Each structure stands twice: as C-alpha cells, then as structure tokens.
Length: 207
Ligand SMILES: Nc1ncnc2c1ncn2[C@@H]1O[C@H](COP(=O)(O)OP(=O)(O)OP(=O)(O)O)[C@@H](O)[C@H]1O
Ligand SMILES: [Mg+2]
Image (cartoon, rainbow, N blue to C red; front, side, top):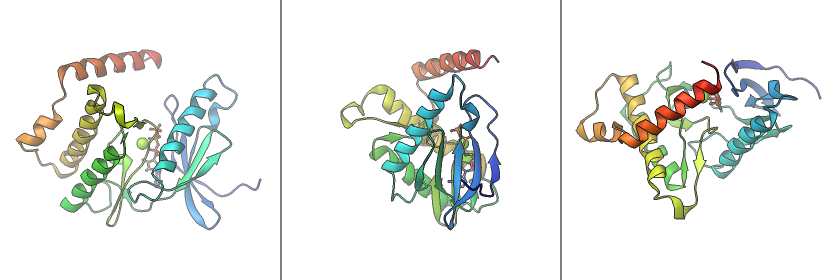
C-alpha cells in the first residue's frame, strides 16, 4: 500500500492513547486515530475494542452535524474520520455565547439519542465557524432506552452537562449562576465512585 503523507496531531503517550494524525483519503483530508503501536502486544485486543466502540458510535451518529463522519476502520487498530477544520474550543477559533448554546444543544441531542460522551473538555470540542463538533467518542456509552433512567446514567448525563459549563467557565472566565452551580455539584456517591476509579486507574498505570 502506498504510504501517504501524514502530519502528527497528537502523539499517544499514555496507556492506550492513540497516535492521531492528519492524512488524505482520496481527495479529502482525514484524521486517523492509530493504536498500531499495540500490535502484537497483550493490549492489542483492548485497543481493537476501543477502535470498534468509537467507530460504532460515529457510525450511529453519521449525518449528525455535531460529530465527524466516520471514514472507516483500518486494519482493526485504527479508525479514519472526517477532518474538521477550525480548532479546539478556547484556542484560536472564535467562540461566543452562540457557540456555547450550540454546544449545550449538541450535548442535549446526543443524550436524547441515548449516548453520553463522558470525556467533554475543550480539546474534544472543535469549533469550525458556526459548526460545533464533538470528537473523541472513545469513552462514550450508548444505553438502551429502558435503562436510561438508572441513577448512574442520569449521573453520566449530569456530568456531561457539568463539563459543558466547566468548558464555558474556563474559556470565558464567567462564574455560573445558582442553577448551573447546582448542575456542577456532583452527588456524594458519584464523587466517591469517581475517586475510587481514579485511584484504581492510577494504580493500574503505576503512578
Ligand atoms: N476529526 C477531527 N478533526 C480535526 N482534528 C481532530 C479530529 N479528531 C481529532 N483531532 C485532533 O486530535 C486531537 C486528539 O484526538 P482525540 O481527542 O480523538 O484523541 P485522544 O484524546 O488522544 O483520544 P483518547 O481519549 O481516545 O485516548 C484532538 O484534540 C484534536 O486536536
Ligand atoms: Mg481527546
């Protein structure tokens, strides 16, 4: 297969982080998330699961303006998607009140389709003029309708929403009003669960 020029956008350094690069597929620029460095390692099956999961979410969201279009899975350990020009929220790209309204709208639509993103932060939101695009669906979760009222799933939705407000606060420096502050406050059981998970995860990664 001929090698195409590629530009590294982000080098995968931490555990199970992909190399992300910009290349071309046909005539169009495309972004590839590549877990190829795990090939023939014990973590390869896990990397394949991450690729498959993210691809499945993007496939479901095909046609939705707030997610990049999936191009395809390449050899099991990489996925290619539409390159969204512009830049991350809070970077060079201009952001105003309308941008944040669109972001909240996008998150609400995502939730209505049964998916939580679970990793919303400025680098995972790209602003391309009037288009606001959520990327990085590696941690996203889709649940069947009959499970959607479970407390843990409501908590994931609340947490996504809280993250959109945190992004807005970080980018604009504005403090949220009382209603928003209530959304930002996590219930105690959720904070305890998250702390336990973080301790476990750090232990796993040896730091
Ligand atoms: N479709 C895209 N269009 C433009 N830039 C992108 C796109 N996908 C990723 N990027 C750029 O590459 C960076 C890394 O991508 P991404 O967030 O998906 O990977 P990651 O955070 O390393 O992944 P993971 O959380 O799955 O380990 C993004 O912050 C963004 O700058
Ligand atoms: Mg990311």
